Length: 212
Picture 1 (spheres, rainbow, N blue to C red):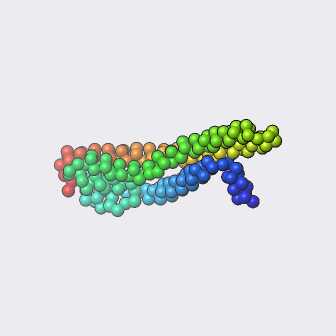
Picture 2 (cartoon, rainbow, N blue to C red; picture 1 turned 180 degrees about the horizontal axis):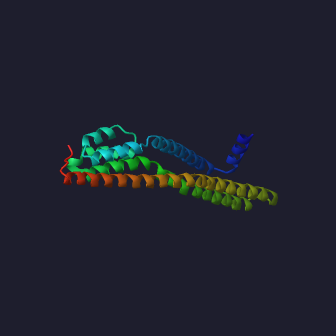
Picture 3 (tube, rainbow, N blue to C red; picture 1 turned 60 degrees about the vertical axis):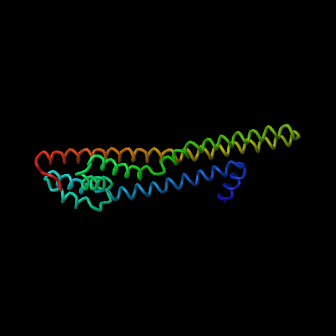
C-alpha cells in the first residue's frame, strides 16, 4: 500500500520528480558507500602498532620500525611506512604524498554528496516553479471548475517536488557533516604523526643513529 501511495505522489509531482529520484539514488549510494568505507577504516586502526613504531625509532631501530609498519591497514601507519622507506631522499615530501593519498581516499565522493545537498532543493524549487507556471496557464484556458482542478493539481505538484527536494537535502546534510568531520580528524592525525616522525628521525640523526 505504501508503495502505491509513493508511486501516486511521484506521478503527481510532475516531470521534475525524475531528476529528483536520480539525486535521491545517488545520495543513498554515496552515504552507504562512505559508511562502509569508514567502518572498515575504523576496524583497521592500530594505535598499538603506531606506538611500537615510535618506540623503535626512539631506540634507533629503524629496521624494526619498517617491519612493524609494513602491510598495515591503518592509514597513519601506512603513511609512516612510506616515509621510513624514503627518508634518505625526501622524508617530508614522501610523507606529504602518502598522507595526501590517504586523504584523497577518505574524501572520495564528498564533493558529489555536497552537490546533492545543494542540487536537490534547487530541483524541488524548479518543480515548484513548473507547477505554478502550469497552473497559471490552465487558469486562462479553462472554465471555473476546470481551472480550480488545474490550480489544485499545480499546487500539489509544486509542494510534492519541494518536499522531496528538501527531504533529500536534509537527509544528506547530517552524513555530509559527519564525513567531513572524520576527514578533518584524519588529516590532523596524519599531520601529527608525520611531524612526530620527522622530529624523531632528525633527533636520531643528531645522536648519530643513522637510519638504514
